[in-house]
Image 1 (cartoon, rainbow, N blue to C red):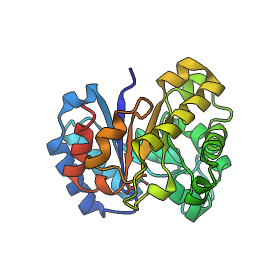
Image 2: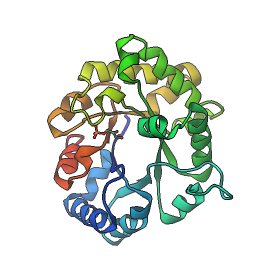
Image 3: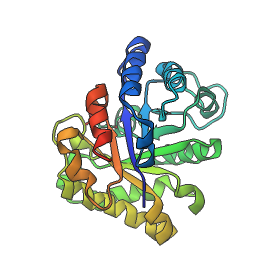
Image 4: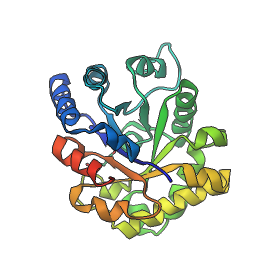
Length: 255
Ligand code: 13P
């Protein structure tokens, strides 16, 4: 049985004061026995990480904290970048890599995603590896092949024991922040393809254990249909993670 993962991606939202307030509201709503069924993660801007970790630690709240990016080198002349030892020291358990916004706006390549995945594993942080096609790739009917190629590239050189502990998030770009959610059937089709590609690389056992999330306009009103699908093990949530009550309702949809 795979445990659900509900990960909030705050993107570039919430100053420290706003982030601390949201973390406190989440902590107030959260009940620690939910952890049996669902792993909850909040991925904040870098500057919010430490204050948010402190809120959850103080409250003994079982919500993990993740970064939204990292650099794969441990230190050095990389102006503006943040290393994995830095986010590790803060207390991050997870890190999103390869988000479509990073790929499209900041030129992150499959090769960089792979290097980041390897370095995160080495550093003991769980990568949340994002994959997903643009509208034009979807309209061309090439999305299956496109997403499988992203999965293959992200996992190159990673062994089975490590791969099993990674999380993959399928986020069709045309459904992000658009209000146009993939239907449960559309999301399931590609999440199943992700799992099938993992099976091609690592075999059945890793494929059965790895968690594959859906992301793209997921909200309390559409979560149940998505989460009911066999190959969807949770969500990577943008907009609906910015309000404690909607994120809490999404977590509750996993219980
Ligand atoms: P929305 O939930 O706002 O569509 O964002 C999805 C996303 O990109 C999460 O990483």
